[in-house]
Image 1 (tube, rainbow, N blue to C red):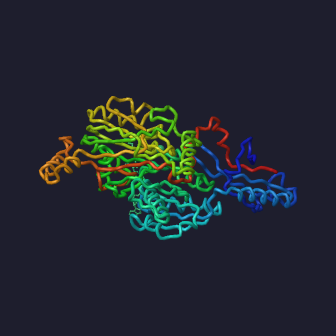
Image 2: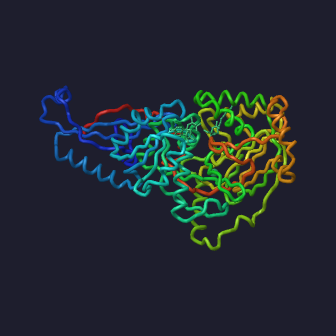
Image 3: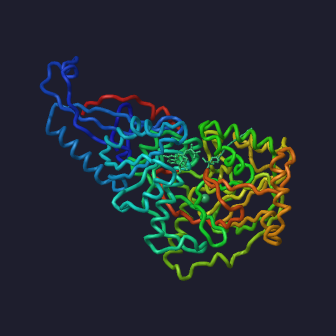
Length: 502
Ligand SMILES: Nc1ncnc2c1ncn2[C@@H]1O[C@H](COP(=O)(O)OP(=O)(O)OP(=O)(O)O)[C@@H](O)[C@H]1O
Ligand SMILES: CCCCCCCCCCCCC/C=C/[C@@H](O)[C@H](CO)NC(C)=O
Ligand SMILES: [Ca+2]
């Protein structure tokens, strides 16, 4: 620990860098120092924690008359920083210049790059030229020479980088992603998210704020947060991975509509959200799920997943034991499946709380980042007024699951088939039904359920409505530490930059 002014301590792990400081003429000549001989100084840059999980880079300069002592301090602190082995030295950075408000490049250049340089992190930067550029590139480059990959953009950009990294690791390990039962190989190359998108849900849910400087500092100090990843398959064909929301019905329809209005920027979700709310479509289908019996928590818990979460730690231990005696691993197929048929306005499966600036507690406030489970939320057909009451609870403190038309289950896998695909499978030649489906989509006031919705998978659409989903416990890692408990003594964190005499 290094004391900084007025009883504030900074752990070595939160020091960004130490630099010798050139004292200019003005500094040398001020007040009482005037009479002294030559002064020596060094500056410590450190993480200053502000309100609402925001981090800033602050600095304190230590002055000294003894050059040797000053150098000893610099040397000792640099050695301590060298011992922080989890810190990245070389990063691969992908910037989506078109995400969110199209500010990705500016945010990186003005707010993030100077901090990386201060922390002596070297970077290879790729500004993406088209969708899937980052994903494809990750299959070509030597990823193993990097300590991490950074994406500057939103949830969609993160999803691309995650698919590139996880896909590459499976390819290099000879794992077939199309096999829904495959034991996927964990990806140990961490991903850092610099938020510059429209929702930035993954960043917000893992850091507690959507703020580029805060995220850059979490990368610099080498934080590590394991993350559950769901694999999504259809008929033994791999579709996508998901870490935040897999949403059918309401959130799928919003996404489909909003994709046509990308030019509106983040506002497109509000516009399409309102339109989708008015259309009030419900969808008929069957859900089968396997409850997550291994995990200690429940979706109705009052406590949320926080830094050092013991529920996620327990899952980590279980995972390590599974890896140790993988021959004895419990077969998922043996465990019971529960089946629910119904008419749904929304089916939301979330691997994390899905907190974001629009919904600060998220769609499932007690979901865990790394417990090997997802919360499956079923919102059954109800009146528009009731659905509005449900949506409003995304934005306030009230219990979102305390409605007779909402059910929530903690699951480790699930399957969904829409009534339409079931009917089509039983009579593929029944073209009349498909035509009728089209007719009803053209008449939103009808609210009928003949057509399929689309799955919203972390902000990307899926091509199939019938899906099989399996949660892979802690398949990947982020440069984050989960949301920290609010510091009781925030005043202690609000010191300004200052100077200190050794
Ligand atoms: N140069 C590019 N041109 C066009 N599309 C791109 C480019 N680079 C990346 N993309 C794609 O843009 C999509 C959306 O990007 P991103 O997630 O950064 O922003 P967003 O959709 O506004 O935010 P959010 O996902 O948080 O709602 C991603 O799926 C990504 O594949
Ligand atoms: C009338 C009140 C309406 C309140 C609506 C609240 C909306 C909350 C939005 C929460 C979305 C959280 C899930 C995140 C999903 C992302 O993966 C995805 C891509 O960024 N974003 C969206 C909007 O689909
Ligand atoms: Ca989880």
